[in-house]
Length: 509
Image (cartoon, rainbow, N blue to C red; front, side):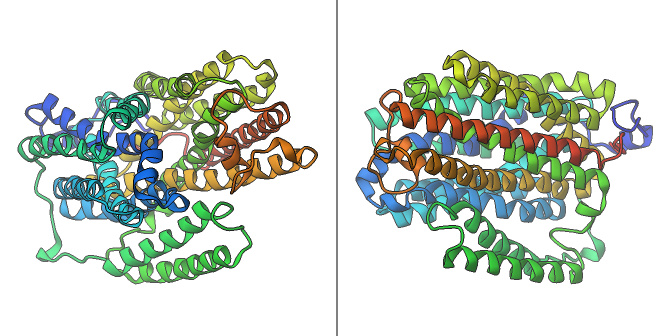
C-alpha cells in the first residue's frame, strides 16, 4: 500500500494487477488531447461568431442558449457517463461521445434557424459531457500515480491553448469565411481522434456479475430532469426573467420535487447511477464541495474581467483577452508543478495551500483597482492561475487514487459535475450582485447607461469601443470589485470544505 496522501511505494500486488503501459503511448496521449480539444475549443470559437450567426439566422433574444444549452447538457450528463464508463468501459463511452459531438457539429453547420442551432448545440453538449468525464478518467486508468500529474497537466494545457487560440480562430473564420465552417472544423479533428483511439486504446476486460447488466435508467432520467430544471432556473434567473417571477419559482419548485424523486429512486436502485458513497466518503465529499467552490470562484475573472478590461481600462478586445488568457496559461504550468508540492505535503494540504493563496490574490483586485493600469489585473490573473493549478489537479489525482478502477469514472464525474454546477451558480449569483450594484450606483445618473434592452451588464457589454463614460465606468469598477470579493469568499469556503477531508488521502493506487 502506498503512503496515504502521496505516491510512496506501490504495493507489489497492486502493481502486478495494474494494466501494462499502453503501446504507442504518445499517439494515445495525442488522441486524448485532441478529443478534449473538441470540447475545449468549441465555446471559445463560437463566442466570436455570435454576431454573424445572429445576422444570418436571427433570434437575438435566444442566442444565449447557444451556450446555456451546451452547458446544461454537458453538466447533467456527467454523472451518467461516469457510471456508464465504470460499467461498460471507458473506450465505448468515449467513442460514443466523440461520435455524438461530431454529429452535433455537422448538424449545427446545417442549421436553418436559431431554434435548430440551439437544439443541435445541446446534442454537442451531450457528446462533450462524455468526452470531458472519460478523458480525465482514462488518464488515471492508463498511467500510474507517479505519471498522472504530467498527463493531467498535458490535458489541462488543451484548455489553456483553447482560451488563447479559440477567439483568434473564431475571429479569422467569421471575418474571411462562413460561420458554419466553425462547426465543420471539428469533424477532421474528431475523426483523427476516433481512429487513434480505436486503434491504440485497449482496456482490460471488466468483471460483470453473472453476465447481467443492471442499468439504472430510471435514476439517470430522474437525475437528468432534476439537473435540467435547476440549472435552467440558475442560468436564466435574473436574465431571461426576474428571480421571483413565475418561471423561476416554477423551475425551482419542479427541481426540488424532482430532486426528492431522484433520492428515492437512487436509494432503491440495485446499482445507482449516483451512488451514495460519493457523499458518504469524507475525502470525496470534501473534494466535491471544494470543486464546487472553485467553480464559483473562477467565474469572476472568466465572465467579468474582459468587460472590466474594455469598459473600465479602455483596452481593445485583443488586449482584454490577453489579460484573461494569462490565467489559462499559468493554470496548466502550475498544475504540472503541483506534483512536487503534494508529494511533500499531501493532496489535501496542497489544495488548501492553493485556495489559501487565492483569497489574498482575489482581494488584491479591489485593493488595486484605483490604479487603472492594465498590468495589475494581468498579474492578478497570472497569480490566480498558479493558485488554481496547485488546487485542482491534486484534488482530481487525489480522489482518483482513493477509489478502485471500477469506481473511478463515477468519482471523476462527480468532481467535474460539482465544478460545473459551481460555475453555473457563480454566474447567476455574481451576475445578480453586479446588476444590483450597477442599478444602485446608476440611479443618481440614469443617463449614463446606454439605451439598451436587458440588464445593466447587457448594456455595458455593448460599449466595446474604449472605456465607458465616467459614472458608468466607476459603477462597473465597483460592481466587479464586489464580484472579486465574493470570489475570495468562495475560495475561503473551499478551504473550509477541505478541512472536512482526512489530512492524508487513503491512496489505493
